[in-house]
Length: 112
Length: 115
Image (tube, rainbow over all chains, first blue to last red; front, side, top):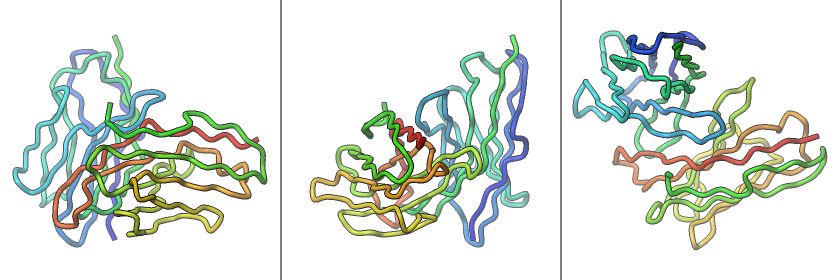
């Protein structure tokens, strides 16, 4: 069965600092991996997805993630945090056009 | 704006009642998914429809049912509501082919409060 584990339910960084949100996956076959963002009182918006084309995936709003098979990880990073990045971030795994299995989410707080 | 619409935005009802949540997928998408987001369970997949047919089922209670109509909109019916059914219900849509890496696009959600 597929699953994802997000390490840290809450991450706090200063404005301008590096953002690192961790996600490890468990899958018996090569997975598709996704990062979604949820702003307060809104739906989920896709940030980026890994589909085996390239291990380093660039997404919207300056975010990127690197697929590391040896570490079964797909961590999300952004070099410089902005106040507008404050939101909840979800890592998810799927196989093709099937259900998404989400992690528990990481709430990102940006300190001025 | 993802192109997926959900109505209503908010729903407040009492225990034992029945409600219907509606979802219209993005133009051209054949697959519709329903997810439930609650504080204790997180984001959980409920059910998927593809072009009118049920394709996959997740942790959906027997009190809940869904369908997808010929115009591809979908409805999630929740009956005999309990306090624990209070949650955000999201609909997502995708092209729906098995072999592709298509993305699921999420609607804004319906917040259900059961009193």
